[in-house]
Image (cartoon, rainbow, N blue to C red; front, side):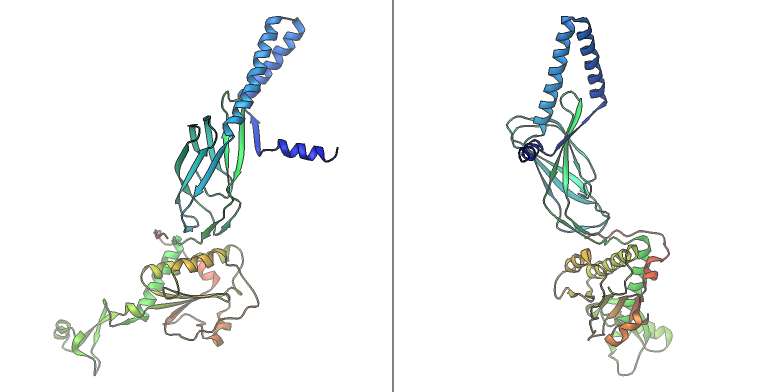
Length: 370
């Protein structure tokens, strides 16, 4: 006997829930009032009305349940999704039964990323309906608990019946690559410092400077030389040699919101320079990646999507310090023996957690997207 009740309870449980609406409350109160009057007066007409109302209530529950039965949903999202950015997606609903479903509302459970609610007046039997939706995830990470909720009040609106449908998929969300207002100022400063570090002969004009002995006359600016009376040389940036060496110190990184801000800043720096043709080497105590030599920028973003502070792991040694170093560390002094910069200089930019988290907010916002 003890084993029969759990099996019976499991058989009755289908994942559907219902909530009585205001219309349902009014209808139920009217039904009770008529029932009391019918039994009190023994009026056959009232018994007929009571029977009709009870039949209506039963039919309403059956049709409502039938409308939600046989519905299947598929959720399509882009391969690359960044936190706090609106991303297009698709929802496909299939009606597997032969009869149509009416007045169906589709909404996402918490953490599914779908902001808008969809409404289907009717879904024909055996048909497939496709809708475009907007996805938005507030933070980076892996979203596993994805589900959508079907709901309907059809046919009379006495109850709102809901069915929770798990999607059984996980979504990897990158850190936001859209610069925060405070990051715009940081990126502008960093771009200027890197441009100054790699000035030389290339394609983009950098400055006019005095001629140095034994230099080639190919870049002599004769107009400027005639104006000043001394030989002047045009200097250009060397785009092909620009390399950014970025190190994220996981052991000294502060946990919580400050660490999330640092990760977002790293993602913005990596995304910004990779989109402008730069060579980016990204290092932590756990990983080392080079873009574009060893992969694309999404390999770094995938790592940053799930990275967390760690302790006790060794710091990688920097063997080639010819690039411009960008270091995020709460204690940069301990990095000197490994070849990394310990303070901001002509060939390095060192940021403490407080520098990133407390940067003043200038006017303007970024708009880069993956």
